Amino acid sequence: MKPISVNIIRDKVCTMVQDINFNYPKDIRFLLDEATHNERNPLGKTTLKLLQENADIAAKEHIPVCQDTGMVIVFLKIGQNVQLIDGSLNEAINEGVRQGYEQGYLRKSIVDDPLYERINTKDNTPCIIYSEIVDGEQVEIEIGTKGFGSENMSMLQMLKPAQGEQGVIDTVLNAIKQAGPNACPPMVVGVGIGGSFDYAAVLAKKATLRDATMANPNPKYAQLEKTLLTEANKLNIGPQGFKGDTTVLAINIEYFPTHIAGLPVAVNISCHITRHAKEVIQ
Amino acid sequence: MIKVTTPITKKLCETLQVGDLVYITGTIYTARDAAHKRLTEMINQGIELPFDLKDATIYYVGPTPTPPNKTFGSAGPTTSARMDTYAGKLYDLGVSVTIGKGYRSKAVQDAIIKNNALYMVAIGGAGALLGKCVKHAEVIAFEDLGTEAIQRLEVVDFPVTVAIDGKGRMLYE
Image (cartoon, rainbow over all chains, first blue to last red; front, side, top):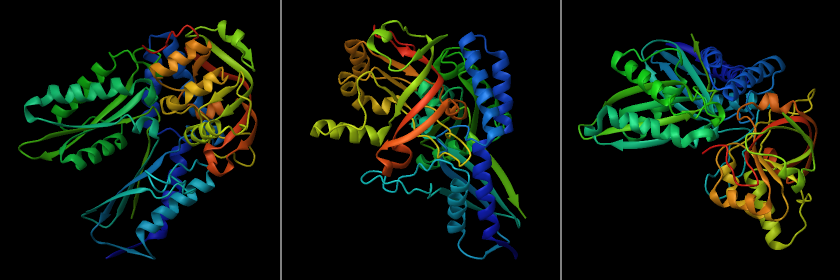
């Protein structure tokens, strides 16, 4: 067994949550720069340039790119030959979030009871943790921090298998249309296809965290990503809803086998920041 | 590009049209979900409000905490639609401008027309850039709400676009 201290994981989480709030991920910045160059609507182009300027100020001055520093979502892949030592993994991850949000002067946006009291927990915990046991002797931590302006515009549909590809296209484009200016376009859209009601949504979330410059390895799904991106950018929502060519920066699809009777489709809408990072601890 | 100084009076509102890029200098008040709920409760109970609503500009924002060596944190707009339930009443009581992002309801559009007021949008997700326009900030009510407390901000050249004007014309169709 390979021992790994949960304290190392805590410290990584603490650094990562700060880093993603101050610095645009490289993939998203690349797409933003490309879109700024290509945008034909003058007001859209000006807006994209302001987003670039905002990103530069944030990185230089250590001010969060967006004031909604989000709810933290952690995907863990834990090698089955790893023994986690020095305490509770869940507590360590939440402690990393707590320390990172305090040290970085990040906004605390979590309320403890979603329906009744809605009292702010004041340390941005708890975060959401998904863990998976895989082969090997390392721990992979993937972190996203999600603002809710865009999260609120996400949706899930249980399609009939006969609705097929067109059903998926309609669902995704409809979600983007409804999100409009509320989701801080240009958006990044994660689509989860298959699995079950719950798992489709997890896949959609995972899709938002994937490198946005990489296509799905399956050529059919890669083609669908391309089709969706082209169609979405014809909607003329544009940067911040000011119209133009740039409504969506990227559409990532993740898929999973499903039941003979089902075709679940989840659309997780994310914004032009889409903060994400991945680290491996060996 | 149009520069305006607060208070943004109804007379000043009349000169601004949908799509105008406006730079605001002066005093604006932060308020989002929880603060709106409390303000409305206070109005219903006839309690005096923490600031004068007449010709006031309300900014829908929940900023990040201010680091020790800075004037203010990150402060971009939040989604306005969540404040739609409360906005009509505030416009009726004298608020001339609200600033946020995204769509408004038909009821809010009607309240804007009725009161000859304005709805403006700032760039969503440009919190670092917008926060730098804040030169002074002071919590004036509901400190227990943390980021949702009401703050009086002094801003200089705060960039916004008119999204609904006094004639009810809308930027997003």
